[in-house]
Amino acid sequence: MSRNPWFETVAEAQRRAEKYLPGMVYGALVAGSERGRTIEDNIGAFGELGFAPRVVGHHAARDLSTTVLGMKAAFPVMISPTGVQAVHPDGEVAIARAAANRGIPMGLSSYASKPVEEVTAANPDTAFQLYWSGSRDTMVQRMERARAAGSKALILTLDWSFSNGRDWGSPSIPEKVDLRTMVKLAPGVLPHPRWMWTFARSGRIPDLTTPNLQPPGGQAPTFFGAYGEWMQTTPPTWEDVNWLAKEWNGPFLLKGVSRVDDAKRAVDSGVTAISVSNHGGNNLDTTPATIRILPSVAAAVGDQIEVLLDGGVRRGGDVAKALALGARAVLIGRAYLWGLAANGQTGVENVLDILRGGLDSAVLGLGHASVGELNPDDLVIPDGFTRTLGSPA
Image 1 (cartoon, helix red, strand yellow):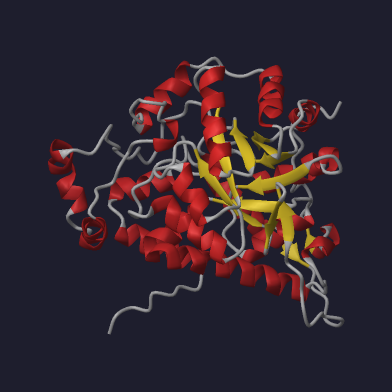
Image 2: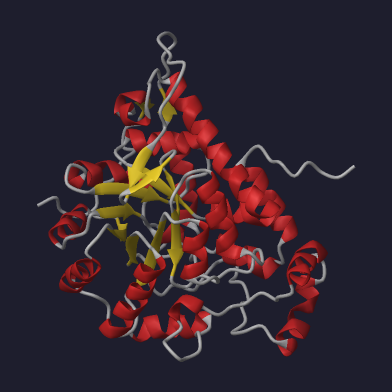
C-alpha cells in the first residue's frame, strides 16, 4: 500500500522533503548562517507565546480574509519570494497555481527558476521581487518587464548580507548543471530516485539559471552570476529606495526591516508596506526572532503602512500570533518549499490548508469573528519576550 500523500503538519512535510531531496538541495533550503541561532529563535519564539482562549461566545463563521499590497487574500498568508531551486520541475509555476487555488498572493523572486510571465499567468495576484543589483537602468528594465507581465506589486529585499559560514557545513551548489556536474553529483543524487524520476519525466534537468534577470537579447545569468552582480553593486541609500518606489508608483514592499528607526525611514521613503524580516535566519546570526521585534515596529508605523512578518511561521497558530501583535499578514518560505518537495503543487496546497485550518481554529477559540479582531489580549506574552531595535526617535 502506498503512503498517504496527505500530511497533517508542516513538520511532516519537512521530514518527507528531507527524505525525497538530495542532500545538497535540502541543505540549500535549510540554509541559515553561523550557529543557526536566528533560525532557532524565529521558530522557537512562537512557542514561547501562549493563547488566552475564551470558552463562551464563539462564532459559527469566521472571516479570515484581508488584503495585502492591494491584492485580496482569502487568509493573511502570502508566498515569500525564494531564489532558484531544484525542488520540483514545475517550480514557481506550481507554487503560483497552488496559491491561486487557495486565494492568496504570490511573491516571485527575480532569482526564481521560472519567468515572471509564466507565473503571473498561473496567479494574476503576483508581486515581483528585486534585489538592489546592477545599474538603475537594469533595475528599471527588470521592473518594467514584471509590470508588463501583470505584476501588481513590487518587493525590494534588502535583508541580505554576505554570510556563508555554517557550523554544520554549507551545501555544495554547482555553477550550472551539465554532464560533468551530473557525474560529480551522482553519489548524492542516486539515492533519491523519485526526485530524479520527477525531473526525467518532465524532460528537463534542474536549471540554475535566473530567467527574470535575462537582459534583452542576452542570456540569463546563473544564480552565482546574479549573486556576483549583487555583490559588486554599491548598496542603496534611502534616497535610492525613494527613487525605486517612485519609479514603480504602486504597492511597494520593503523586505528586511527590524529596527524602529529603519521602519520610520521606510515610511519617509515612500514605501507602502514593510516586512519585519531577518531573511529567514540566512543573514547576521543572533539577530532576534522577527516575532519579538514585530510589536515595536507595528506600534511605530502600523497606522501609516502595512506591516508584514516573515520568519519561522510553521503553523496557523503562528499566523494568529503575528496578527495579534500587529502584522497584517505573514510571508512563508521554507514551509511551502517542503510542501512542494513532498507532493508538488498539491503539497503546497496541503501546507496552505494546514495554515488556514490552524488560523481558523485560533480565531474560533479566541472568540473572534474575523482575523481583524486579533489583539495582544489574546496572547500570554512572557516578561522580556519582545525586543526593540533602533532608536524610536
